Amino acid sequence: MKLRDDFYWGNSVSSMQTEGAWNEGGKGKSVYDVREAGENISDWTVATDSYHRYQEDFDYMQDLGMNMYRFQISWSRVNPMGDGQWNEEGIAFYDQFIDDLITRGIEPMVCLYHFDMPLHLAEKYNGFISKEVVDAFIRYGKEMVDRFGHKVKHWLTFNEQNIFSMPEEGFRVAGYLTGKKTLEELYQIQHNTMVCHASIANYIHKHTDAQISGMLAYQEVYPATSHPEDVRLAREFDEFMNHHYLEMYSKGKQLDSYVKFIENQKFDLAITEEELEEITQLRSDYLTFSYYSSTTIDHTKVPDDAVPNEYLQYGKEDNPYIDTTEWNWQIDPDGFRDILNKMYQRYDLPIFPIENGIGVIEEWDGQNPIADDYRIDYHKNHLLALLKAVNLDGVDVLGYLGWGLIDILSSQGDMRKRYGVVYVNRENHDLKDLKRVPKKSYDWLKEVIHTNGDELLK
Image (cartoon, rainbow, N blue to C red; front, side, top):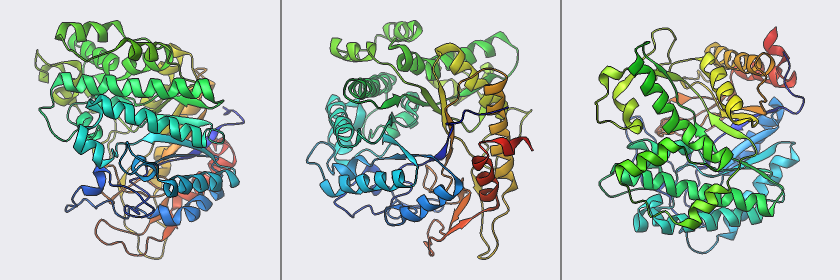
């Protein structure tokens, strides 16, 4: 039960959940910078202040033994308008940021977009529904590759790209501010972002020796029962929300079911021959995904006229056989192993899980480390599932990156939901001193990393 000697251990974050400094260093506004705070929602002005404190966070990662950090370049920090002049101060920040990682033996993985659309592009063009924003993103991505491709060898375009296929959520993360949110518009966003991804991936392969992957939030959905209709809906959901993307990432090929669906719906997505050619050329060096939980689908709750993108909105049903978190995210390490197998056996590319973790409400007493045995159990059981996938199933797994292993704001801006092995001393509306405090899980994870997983078998 061994992992490869060059296994990647690390941490994943986004810029808006960590950096703060929303109006410093020449940064322009993003859509997050104008979101209002609420009872259990912080604003995004400070986050965990990593813009000023990242050296301390890097020291913790180095002490843990991590050798990779996946972070996001903030589009509006390097180009305040999104489609305007480059902000050299912002670019210099990331240049030093990358160097400080490499100095510590931590390999950078850059993500170009984690949902924080430059406000100007959202207000003027309505985000990724617009071809103008497609052009602006491709310009931005190529510039970042030109600036950093000589020392950053791992790239992502979009965080969890299949979220662009999810009703409601897909519009929000695309910078879409006004409109009817039609299904045709959702598919336009879906297509436009794939053109963006393909264009940057092809550029990286043509001009650098770096590697790039497509990333999705793998939706592990079981049939709620053995009823054939539950099985059918689970399969169709898997095809449209997962494999539609994976086929293009790995083969540059659209699923026939997806093409037929667009034809039957009579969608006009303004697809050009040049765009299709970019997608046809698309390949990935490996495949990445996030995974936190699984669920089931009950066909009796799904209307007859629902489309696959909507199935889970109607038919989601809790699985009675597995535990859940206080946020009702069901804990399923076996689902993690299942995904590793499905992706590897079907696409024959190395697999790299780059987000995994458990969010829990935690309070620090100001003196003693938080005793987060539940976090140790969560990561241990998922890593044991990964070990089985590697050693029993033959899956080629490149590494394991936890999500927010130094506490960050949640994706909804809620500081109560903590994923880290290091506590950051702030609340939603009280910044306190932002002190970093290792939890009990810190020492456990350090031993796991320093033994390259052997500690898991004790």
